[in-house]
Image 1 (cartoon, one colour):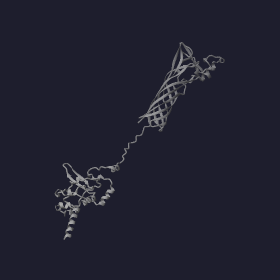
Image 2 (cartoon, helix red, strand yellow):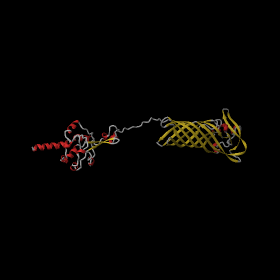
Image 3 (cartoon, rainbow, N blue to C red):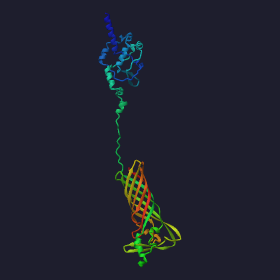
Amino acid sequence: MLISLLIITTLSVTTILMAPSSKERFPLMHVEQVSTTKPAEVHNKVTKTATQESYFGVIEPQNITVETITQINENQLIANYEATSSINLKREQTLAATETKERIGITEKTTLNKKADLAQLNVNELEPLNLNIVSVNEANDEINHSEKPNLLKTIPGNTEPILLEDDYLKNIVSKKTILPWKKLSKVGFQFYITPSKSYRTLSDAEVKQFIQPLTAPSAGTQNVPMGLNYSASVNDIVRHSPATGLELGFAALYNITSSIKFKAGVQLNVRQYHIETFKTVNSNPSTIALINNNGVQTINLLSPYNNNAGYKSEQLDNRTYQVSIPIGVQWEIIKGNRMGLNAEASVQPTYSINNSTYLLSTDYKNYTDGNGFMRKWNINTAAGINISYKSGSNLWQIGPQIRYQHLPSYTNQYPIKEHLMDYGIRLGITRQWK
């Protein structure tokens, strides 16, 4: 009889411990007092099967007394909590405006004084509790496979998933905005200005070869004017000095390659040099000997300027205005991000539009008006090297330039040949056409 009673008592206690009632459950109000020392690791949805409903319905809640509850071994209760570390508690609360779902993962050791708290439990105040018991092996496997909590499982299905930590980084898609390729134009425009000094070179070889031999005493004629000194050169007799000139230009550039550009434009040049002479009271005849197919032709013109004597000194400005079309290339020798070095060269067909020139007589005695002997068309070449600096869309250039006139300033019949040469500093700005 005693053995039977012991067996019944053991079964009753075991049943109470392992199977709580499906209709009445332990209250959750005391769960808020539980202190935790490690984070929840597994969150699972709590469900109740039909088998549990049938089994739990056999035990009536009113059969559970306070004395029965107080007999629960505290160590056994703690072990059950540790074994079911993956249990999720779902508490449903109805709010005034919205319905929220709160999941609480119980993964901590309970630090409450179970005997004191359980003795005060009121069975009638127990709130429904849905439990889904997961075996220890399954819980451990899930913990091992997910060291970090996947918070996507705790977000309601009707909201967009929020990616956290590594999941966020893994789902980032590198989106590179591919802009349409804007091909740079090969055409650029350039404006430049070149202050310069104009020099001249004189050659009297034809005077000595064709004219002066005719003035020798053995020639027996005085139709040709005699020079001041047969052995002296024209450069030793005249007194000329360079003067300031100016060059203004506009050009278009076309990129043949990345370092070579074709260049063409329009250009205005002012070239001049000074002549030191004397002014006379009266105008004196100035003889000009011209060489043509029939021999030497002499022309006499009146002039108030004498190269040797006069009542006062006078300075004449031999000035020429020219328009040219430079055609050439520009070569990028060094091309850096900001600084660079380039060289350029051009051929310039040139037209003289206005002149204020003075012509030296072939006997070297006088200066007379030389506009009627001026050559209208000429050929010039220019070469220079520039240091460039890039500022935004503009390319600034500065460097030395030399410009040389290949044909004589006057017609071929005039025996004294003059060639002009300009030395200047060129400043330019180039802008690429977008």
